[in-house]
Image (cartoon, rainbow, N blue to C red; front, side):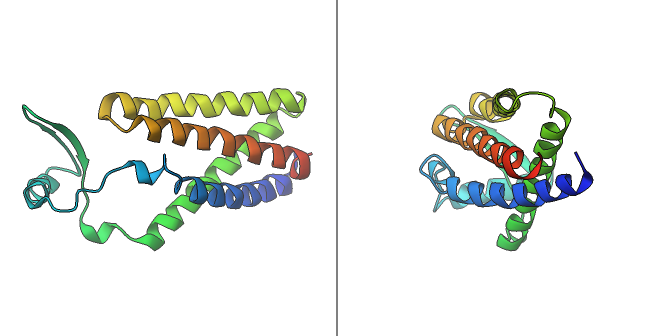
Length: 165
């Protein structure tokens, strides 16, 4: 694999993954599976107190357990989200391109199978742990895993077929 193929694979793959994640995160098992607490001033006050201790808090009571990640409101910025998401997808595309380049002696089917397995490892190693330990919705874990595996596989196929040959 030549460095130009790696560069083109990273850019093309990153753009495709960015678009894919933008579409699939808006499906019912994406961000829509997480409820928004509209009016809970007491929770807001409790979270604000925890900000001095870090940005994570675990609330336990006789009725509810809640894991809260809190940041100052200024942290939440759409341009920042898009920039970091794009950088993340570029990193994934770079790694997918490397994997494809390093396994070019294998058949395309074997390379795609490897990408599927790596996607499953990533899902079980993160998303299903969040579902188990932190109570993330099952449809979020399953849907996000499906999005990840399908996205990586489709992009891997496109890279193998048209860019890293």
